[in-house]
Image 1 (cartoon, rainbow, N blue to C red):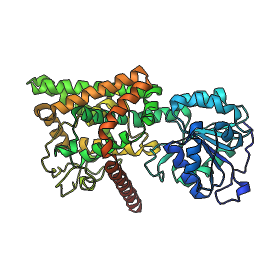
Image 2: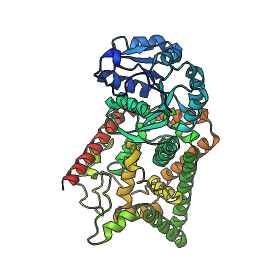
Image 3: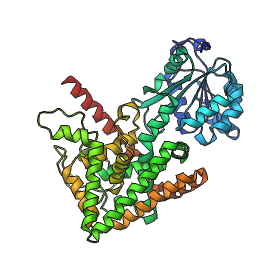
Image 4: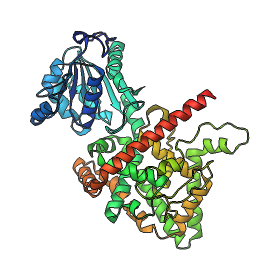
Length: 485
């Protein structure tokens, strides 16, 4: 493709205004506003934005004191005037929006989409954009409440020149994200592998707690360490908009398969727990063997290196000590120490009792049955949610004492059995919801659960952000220290 672009590819936010590209943002939800904020603060001076026409007056009011951001009445005005255009709209509506505004795209402009699933976006762009425009798409793999600094930002040069890609890199550089270069197909595969099961687990936990009408951290039974991650990240998901997760789950075929397997793994393990608890030794044996098989399938390379004298570990665990996580617990913990090795036990919080950790057992079981290696995409495009939840799975599965404690509790303790049942029902419900392909059903299910936690979002959001920041900063420090050694 030899199509030119409208400005120099080496232009930067410090270039004179007349040399800068006009940047268009169609859709001013949370992510659109985050992009506008970072780009404007960096010095890009011609940012044209729009939302639904009925929100135009509100948009003008919101950005009245921001000289670099210029609200437009609709997507036609943005498309006709902009050299780089980003569609920040839900995947469900991308075809309709591009069909309406795409034909107005400025000649030689570059068009991108910020959708979480790219198959519908690609179809919409190819069907409705003029042939004389470039398609260099993007996707920030984090939510609007997470700092983009150091996070993966996927760039997809689908139909464009190297100059077009260079210009996009320059425009988005103020986000200080880590560029990851994929195709549309690779993007959907990576996001399914790193997000589908993670989202399903947190959605199921939240729905189970809502159905039980209980906040687990207030019972004094699910606090500290691993539970801190579960609670904070579940609340973080439900504090976001439902469409952030619906598009990936419903429109990505790979995600549907994984969510269905997660529900199946959850159900299968729970049935074995019931049979084992009722005295079936064959069920006990099958349950333990299945968990150990999943452990070796997903974590085998690490455990082999860890248990072989003189052999260097192929990688290090993700998650930090439980004492760091306990700082961000919504419950009260008296945990005072951190483990010194992967087999150390944790000092339990007040009233703590070991539980089955069914959500984590099912996640690893799901990956094992689908042949997914979660580490393949960890360094490429892992979201903060995925990295932390994989971290707690590691923390559980790489500790013989913790894993044995979870299996013993799953098979022989009854106090958490009703909570596990609610979780199984919730996981199956989310799987069925996704299989129906109904955005309305997904939204209703999400928002009904969201209502139960709404009063706790401020506290949880602050703690969750601080937890993610602390874990990521410590991860970076450890990486730097290891490189120095």
